[in-house]
Amino acid sequence: MEVAAASKMILQTAPDLEILRPLLDESARRHQHLCPRQVLGVRLGLAGLRELGLVDDCYGPRFDNSDKRLLTIVETDGCGADGVGIATDCVVGRRTLRVLDFGKVAATLVDTASSRAVRLAPSAGARSLATVHAPSADSLWHSYLSAYQSMPDQELMRIQRVELTRSLNEILSKPGVRVRCEQCGEEIMNEREIRRDGLTLCRSCAGESYYRAL
Image (cartoon, rainbow, N blue to C red; front, top):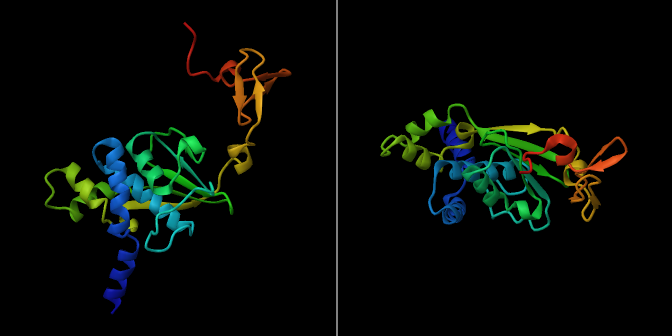
């Protein structure tokens, strides 16, 4: 009985394939293929929703973020970020998905109604365990692709409750707020201006530019 109970517990922390499959299909449609990092992204997003209590223990039904309750911060761009976005229904265009490029396939999900936040990242042993879960795969890449779809959360990822170092008000800002940079004249939205020596400056003019004019 103890073995059966343990098995049930493990199964409950892996998403139902009927829920996972459409999300992976949508990710594959956008990329014209499916890769392991897309699967990781979807799995991280689903697990984060469950940890915040925004979906049930079986990871379903699909989360609807039309009310912008969820803010997702991903730590790199690329396939994994799209997987997270598909699972969480967060997109850059609605200001519910942010990219802070730390070069990590990791994501932090924030429930803006309660300010609770959870950070998820692949476990250090995920790649090694994938070969155990898919021993007959054609290659390491194929073993990752297959195993990441079925591995229990406990093996696939690390889940942490976290606290943001900036307030939600500061991150989200006030909609409709606009000012002009007093140096370049360009419009600045979302309270991203910098006040320096009595001037209102954009981040570029304040010395944080990622480009220079030719």
